[in-house]
Image (cartoon, rainbow, N blue to C red; front, side, top):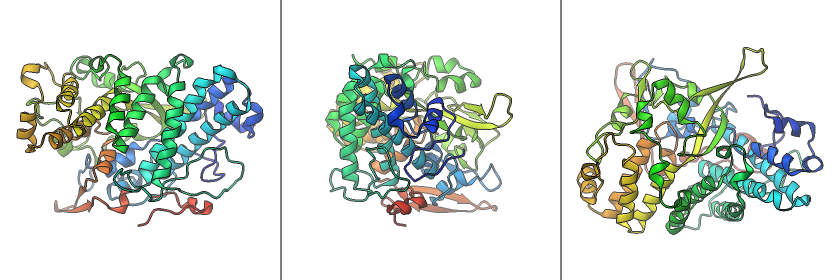
Amino acid sequence: MKKLYISIFALALISTSGCKKFLEKAPDQRTQLNTVEKVAELLTSAYPEANYIPFTETSSDNVEDKGPGIGNESRTITQPYYWLDNDDNDTDTPTYYWNSAYEAIAAANAALEAINTHNFGNAALPYKGEALLARAYAHFMLVNLFSKVYDPATSNDSPGIPYMTDPEKVVVGQYSRGTVASVYASIEKDLLEGLPLIKNSSYRIQKYHFNVAAANAFAARFYLLKKNYEKVIEYASAVSPGNSFATILRPWNTRYNTYTLDEMYVYFTQASEPSTLLLIETASSWARTRTPRYGYGQVINNEVFTPNVTGARWCYKSAYYGQPHYSMLKWNEYFVKTSPNATIGFPYTIVPVLTADETLLNRAEAYAALGQNALALADLNTYCSTRILNYNPSTHAVTLAKIAAYYGITDPKAGLITTVLDFKKKEFTQEGLRWFDILRYKLPVEHKIFAVNGSFQTITLAADDPRKLFQLPSQVTLSGVAQNPR
């Protein structure tokens, strides 16, 4: 998609959304954002309209090489499989995500400045909360994609990413990356200030905004990265008051089990799904990437449907487009024409970036880390009750004994965390979240590269490999920001 490149952080003025057209007409937002309604409209642009899944998923151990001549080999998919830098500004690339995240941050900052400038009163407070949460989320994603993972056992003084809190007033400013520690401190400040202000009734369609449940799910994910497990439990529990997670998880073994393939594509990303907490509309071709050479194939599909620790198989849906091309039936493309009568346009993919399913598994991991084994098992079994066909708690329940036998791990804490990570790896196949667990636990990744004669070589991404940090766009050097070492 075409972008007006003012600076590496500036809000792009060219877009198809109504509020961005408004900004295009009035670069000085302070003189025009003079009502709460205009601030609310602007905040629809405060979420990164870019998709991280193509490069995080393809960099992970949830993909495979299907072989020479099998499937397409676009740079968007090929580069992350080989862990090569891609400075293209095309959709579905790290550079595109970086630019889109800072555009979202710019929109949030413009909204916050308008709220601070005008006397809107209490009516603006929910939108102030949304702007703070959106700003925190975009920076959180950036720091975890482009900087070293947060480690509470260290000083976290490695380079972070520029944390923007004010609208830009210059074309090319000079910025500092700060440190991972300083970025996390700023994220936490925005998160804690914004969360109490969120009000669901402020939104017509809550799932496209930081509603209360989404804000708490984000807080739980944030504190999981910080390994503040008490906070993870606190915020994850707030997503489902009364601990009724079983009623809001994806119904794989009931309703989803009855869907046709076409129905599955439609329902997975609908706002009406109880499991979906926050949806972001992304400019992305991911939904049409069904037959890549490097992706979800026969080997990974077999791993997903191998009997798990319960003794049964997951009842996910999988379809193939001529073996070995498989799909988990999660993505439905929305094609936006350039004009009503046009035959050309841009593909979009709706991404559920926060879900009840992830939140429950995050809480299970937190319970396990704190040695609260019974509660961790309870969460894992709640999860399994929606994933195993004809689930029977007397025969399918996850126990420490089953974990020890299945994974060969006798230590309860290690066994429970391994179970959580295994469940998440399968659950979020083709959703890109496995990459963040690889970062958190400093897991190595191996990719096989097949030759025409069937032989292969194995390439390895080591635990502390610098390529685990996606490369910042080359243009950042214009603003005094250093790229990641290679």
